[in-house]
Image (cartoon, rainbow, N blue to C red; front, top):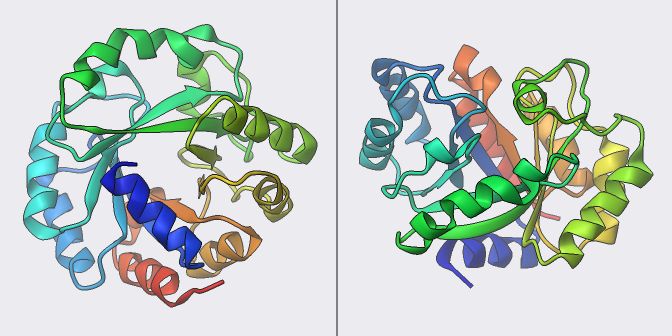
Length: 248
């Protein structure tokens, strides 16, 4: 078990919850990132996910350097494509899009990048990624040519998550995608949590600490927040404080 996986598993075993800050290098300038990091360092997130569905600006390396100069938490690449691989990070979500049926995102792109990852020092975090329809079409669905899971089809979500765990994936990630109109349904989070044993990551559509707390109570081990922080960076403190004070 790698350092990041051990960190997450240890927190989960103690009933502690983690806040992960999702940073999209396409949506910030270095100056904007620094301003947000000045806030974040007073109440740091447990993890930083770095990436996006597209990568138009070549800022990943610079962003990693800047983040590391302010925060000591692990930086994990959340890749939308193979060109987002970066050895300067601490780990990478090795994502299989198990909610879709496009083989390119189930195994195809993984073959392309596997040797590079093997020769790097990145910790690999095998993750079953499940897109859920949260009220708006997402870039991830468009790029991957897949349909998201229906919002109310909890049984499909449970079976998909179970299949991912049985395939040996170490994490399950329920995501509404960037700009989701509403969070993942708490009934769905709860149903999936009851059936799987691996850590459950939840993201998309979470805009308030109250919504984060509800996701934790439903069974999320890690909550990922990104979009709303771009608009209101002061929420970084609120989200981190909510996660740090929550015990189950």
